[in-house]
Image (spheres, each protein chain N blue to C red):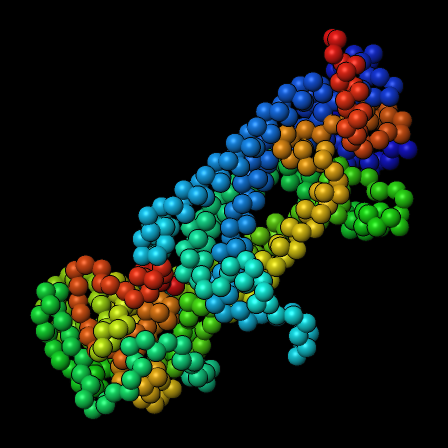
Amino acid sequence: MTTERERELRAPLDDAPTITVEEFRRRSRRSFLTGAAGITGAVLGWRWLQNQPVADGIPQPLRSQLERNETLWTRLSASRSAPEFAVSEATPIQVNGRIGIRNEIDLADWTVRVEGPDGELLDDLDVAAFDALPQRDMVIEHKCIEGWSSIVHWGGVRFSDFHQRYADRVGDAPYVGLETPDGLYYVGWDMASIMHPQTMLALRQGGAPLDQDHGAPLRIATPNKYGIKCLKRIGVIRYARERPADYWAERSYDWYAGL
Amino acid sequence: MGTERELPQQETLDDGEVIARLVHPRAIRWLHWINFPLLFIMIWSGLRIYWAEDVYAAGIGSWQWFAFFPDAVYERLDLGRHLARGLAFHFSFGWLFVINGAIYVTYLAITGEWRHIVPDRHAAREAKDVVLHDVRIKKQAPPQGKYNAAQRISYTVVLVMALVLVVSGFAIYKPTQLYPLPLLFGGYQGARVIHFTMTIGLMAFFVVHVLQVIRSGWGNFRSMVTGYQIERRRPPSDTSPPISVTPVSESETHATEIEEVSP
């Protein structure tokens, strides 16, 4: 018997248009041909993408999309901040990369070159110069592009405070490049990101001076970009008019790497 | 019902004439098939990202059943050492996946098609009967509309999972710019776990879905391509004797086609 329930469930379907089997055959053929064309188009599109010129390790259309993503996200909310945590929540952070810091250095000899956009030397600073700037602490989630994250207690100087000393001399240079003393590791930052109040030239981790594995004596730290941008053992800070070279962006990663 | 009432009575044969009924509108078919490669690309590129920090495992407490994923899986599918390419594909095709899904949900909402999918209050009981029927414990399948109750529940759950998947994905992608979105998932790492779990859930759905489509047969698969399902014409349901909504077999269709050659 047809139950009430059956009628209720069936009713919306009964309203659907019907066609003769003959018409169905005709439309069927057309649909399958459309499907075949669609599959062919998808395969060709996929192969087209794979055969595009490579831009720093990935097909150009993907590189362009990463750039569009950057434009979108920086426009949407450039001034937002990541959450901060209690000091007690901080944990040790793993050492993930040693590029540019494989050898130990004599920290007493260390200085950082500060260069202007025309390559001119603005300063050659030792650790004491950074100790003299306003000191801040922040407990933030450091995020690795691989997926892990750690809550880290950083101490040091806001880049924006450091920048005050050079603001007049570097004009409106839109980028800052950072390099290890041996030049093996280098990253590029856009000015908005590096001037963010949570972007820190860190001297301390967990209240103690950085050890060499974590970038002593000076590294950059932020919760708003992946760790690949957080260069350890800064040897050069260079203001730039063009987008600075970036170690990982040259190896298929996103240049912006923003969170 | 309207279509049938307008037809002269003599055209409704006692056995029921074989006809084709539209079950999947064009938009749904396109969105369904576009989603297929997009979901595939997202899972493939996502696994390449996951490889870089593959910390999850299935198990209870400290007992681990198996790790996600065994090395053989990575090797077989070439998932290892492609993090950067995985990210580039994920953050490019992700937009297409999201746009396609958003159009699909909007379409369901505007056209009322969602009524075929979202389960009603009888669905849980009927879904149980569907399963019992599927494993041949029950002889009679429960009544159904376009989809049976088990399908309705799983299609709805899949839509919800896809939504959670996308939202948790954005929470991982831009945790600062979209803050406090990650808090919805218990933080950044919580969002990662949820994102991964939803992916495994969608993969499991995909496997069951494909198996069920194979089990249902060619007519069912074809309906998602052509939109139409072959069935016997039924008299208007309010006066109907017992009827069958079971799609007729291929051979029957052919026989009818031959009969219908002369108008």
